[in-house]
Each structure stands twice: as structure tokens, then as C-alpha cells.
Length: 272
Image 1 (cartoon, rainbow, N blue to C red):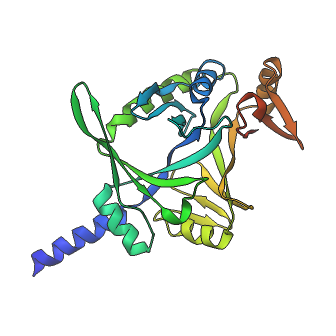
Image 2: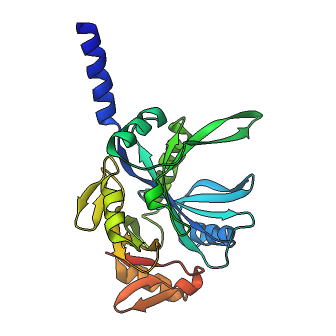
Image 3: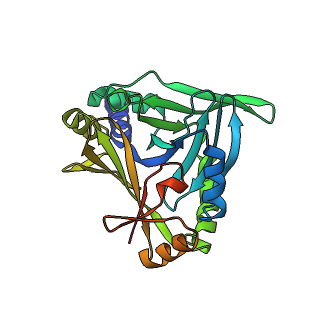
């Protein structure tokens, strides 16, 4: 009897610890993904977490933004000229079996776990598993839990990228990290309920934070999507000077941002 109770307690503790800890990475989708990757890498000096490359019908590259990976992605045959922030990948503490059980307990509606397999050095295996959160996903935005089979697969490259990022003081823009991701919602009540249902999400009004990383801000809109991101820099004045010198500055109602016309429509706001 004691043994059964101990097993139950261990299982319960394991389940209680299973939660989402942060937005691990997010991506912009466009046929101009290779150009944007190169621009952010060479002009803004963002260190690569992984170089731009092809994965079957998908090509992508990831850059380090101080506290999160920014990916530029192109799906073969599905890309558009205009770039759109499209996907948010959430990092869980534990692996898929435990997370799925927790999602069931929280009443979160999700799609079937989708393992991502490919071959490296002649060995095919599952590198990560995606679990789409259905109530937060539409044609214009994809929110999903991304469970890496081997957590060191990208944690080691992130450590290397962060070291270079720190040595370069966030590049010429003086980036500290990603502060906020503004998500547009056509149905605020549904979106608020779906976000607060994610295990690990802490709500204050229409703001959601996890243990680490940027916060999510929901805004009422006619359609769903990721409206913009807000990046924290050491000095808006210094960042503006660099952008002006490179003809990439836009001031919009006293808001400093990288000119969307120079980055295929993406809205990236700079804040101190």
C-alpha cells in the first residue's frame, strides 16, 4: 500500500512540474526568408543558432535574439512575398507523454503529436515533436508546443550563439532581448481563455508571461495573427542612429521601428 502511494505521489509531482516555461522560438514566413536571414545576420549581427538550410519541403534558419530564437522560414509552394510572423513554439519542461496528459487535465484542445524526423549523418530519427494548440491556431497564426527529443540538440548551439551575442553587446542595435510579442485576436474571449489554459501561463489583464522569455500581449483585431514584436535595446537613440545611417529607420507616432518596407513588411519596434 505504501509502495502504491509512493508511486502515485511521484507521478503526481512529475505531472505538477510539467508545464510550458517560455516561448522557445518564433518564426516569420516568406519566400524572402533567405534574404531576411542574411540581412539580420550580417547587418544586425545576430548570431546563428543554426544556418539557413533545407529540411525537405521547408527551408529555414535561426538567429539568436538575446532570449529567444528568431527563425525565417519558407514552405515550398506556400510562401508569400510579404513576410509575416506566423508561428510561436512553446517549450515544455517535460516530454510529450507527460505534457499531453497535462493538457488533457487542463482541458486544452490540441492536435495529435507530430514527430519531426530527418536524417543526419546517415541516421534517421525523431528530433522533435510538435503539438498544435487548436484554439490558438488558424490560417494566420500557429501556436504549438515543441518538444525536443534531445534537449541539447539546440540548447548547445543557443549557448554558443548567446556567448557571441553577449560579446557583441547585442550588435549595432544594442539588443538586449525580445520583450513582447503582440498577438491579434478576432475573438478576445476565446483567445484569453485559450492562453490562460496553457499550463505555466500567468495572466495579468491581456498580458501573459511564462517563467522565462518574452510576454504575450493580446489585442482585439478583425483577424488573428502576430501583429508585431517589441525588442528591448540599450539605447533607442543609438539604435536610431544606426538605422538612419542604413536608411532603415521609421518613426510612427513617436514609435521607433525598423522600416517594414526594408524587411518585407515585418513590424519590429525598438524600446529601451
